[in-house]
Each structure stands twice: as structure tokens, then as C-alpha cells.
Image 1 (tube, helix red, strand yellow):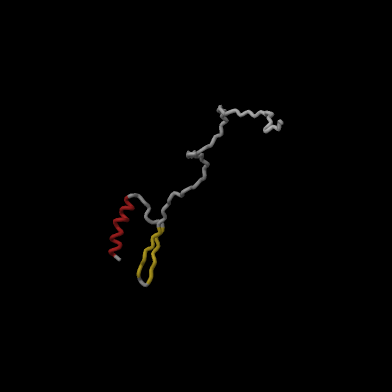
Image 2 (image 1 turned 45 degrees about the vertical axis):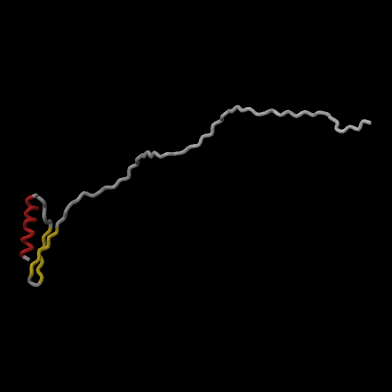
Amino acid sequence: MARSLLSLTPVMMLALSAGWAVADDVKYLDENGITYRETTQVTQRPLAHTTMQPRDYTYYRQRQTTELQEVQRTYQVPITEYQWKAETHRSWNP
């Protein structure tokens, strides 16, 4: 037990020299003729505060689009003309 107290002494001295509060509450307990020292240390820490904030984000990505355009094209086609022609085949002319 004496060995553990000696090893804690440099740590306690460092804490006291830095100006830290080492213990906030010290209690002594006596059990079966052995005296125990209970040290409670309270350390204050900043609390994280979470807030929701609206933010605008712009995402860029490739996008394919299909556009329909009216186009006037000129092309040549053959003209086929049909006419009625009166004919007599195999005439019976005696």
C-alpha cells in the first residue's frame, strides 16, 4: 500500500503545481482496522450543443437530354403520272 501512495505522489504534485483542483470531496472509511481514503473528483466539461441549420447545397451531375427540332428538308422524288388511254385490243373487224 505504501508503494502505491509513493507512485501517486508525483501525479498529485503535478496536478497541484498546475493549479488544478485534484479532489472536491474526501471521505475516510474505517473497515476492519484499515483506514481507506475515498476521493471524488468532479471535472467540468463543455457540453456539446447540437443545432439544426438550413443550408443550401448545389450538386452537379451529368444529365442527358433529348431535344426534338423541326427541320425542313428538300429531296427529289420521281413523278409518276397516270392517264387513261382508250384502246381496243383485238378488235373484231371483218
